[in-house]
Image (tube, rainbow, N blue to C red; front, side, top):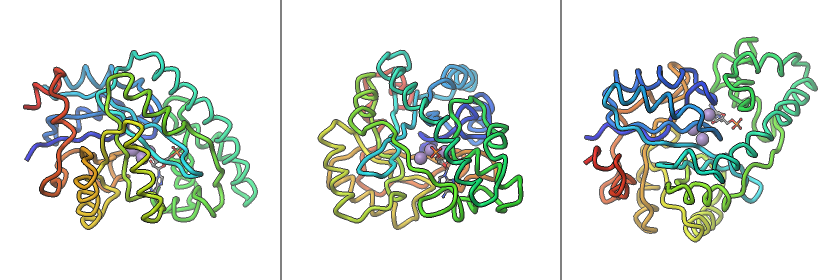
Amino acid sequence: MLNIDLHCHSSISDGVLAPAQLVERAAQRGVETLALTDHDDIAGLTEARQAAAAKSITFINGVEISVSWRGRTLHIVGLDIDPDYAPLVEGLAKVRAGRAQRARNIAAELEKIGIHGSLEGAYTFVGIRSLIGRTHFARFLVEQGYAKDVKSVFKKYLVKGKPGYTPHEWASLSDAIDWIRGSGGHAIIAHPGRYDMGKNVLNDLFDEFSALGGSGIEVVTSSHTPDQIQHFGRHAQERNFLVSCGSDFHGPGESHFDLGQLPEFPYGCTPIWQHWKNTASAELIE
Ligand code: AMP
Ligand code: MN
Ligand code: MN
Ligand code: MN
């Protein structure tokens, strides 16, 4: 089975390892093709690409864009993007610009329940200041003893209906897809099983995503149970979506899946890399 991982995070966003360290770990785990997909930023791609070349890993430029759609937050992964494409670069800068104010809002919410100093605390875990996000708050809350690990934090804090939650407006779905497609890349709905939406709303999302030029969905991800992998594999086949796979690795001990060595796609799915035929990366994969 191919050892391909198309979704992971470095310390540029909310991962723990620097891009080169992440690639080093991927190499140790036998990953042959890797995409780095930091949240709303592409600043780690150059370092990761160089490290990957030294390890003979095929490297795919990626990003995970935060999107607001019908009052929900979605994540859209862009794969095989051109990091020099100006609308993408400028669009991501705009998305990042909202994070500082949101962080202040989160800290104000936590203050209301007597958790002090979370803004400064969260920033101590941040690599690039403009990328401050909930994971950094979560690490601060763990450090302060409010929960035993990052996963447990998200059961009690920082999510809708819990202390530390604050609504936020990210990119629109159509903008995110346009930036990705305009740069020559493919847009993928990340971890569809994680969104709290019923069947009808999910169908609407898939319809709209398709109409806007989206390419596919993540079927294999650490967010999905084995049943969800089968379920979304069927969805993909029904809709002629390409399928993608990624660990969504954030750091040793923090993520459900380590890099690479992922479960296989359900039979009959068409992997995203079959459509990279015109790029240098595809030649290496085949
Ligand atoms: P943000 O983009 O700042 O809203 O942060 C989103 C990030 O928080 C995700 O990419 C995950 O890394 C993390 N996160 C969200 N929900 C959970 C969860 N239930 N368990 C662990 N991490 C989570
Ligand atoms: Mn994350
Ligand atoms: Mn995500
Ligand atoms: Mn992710």
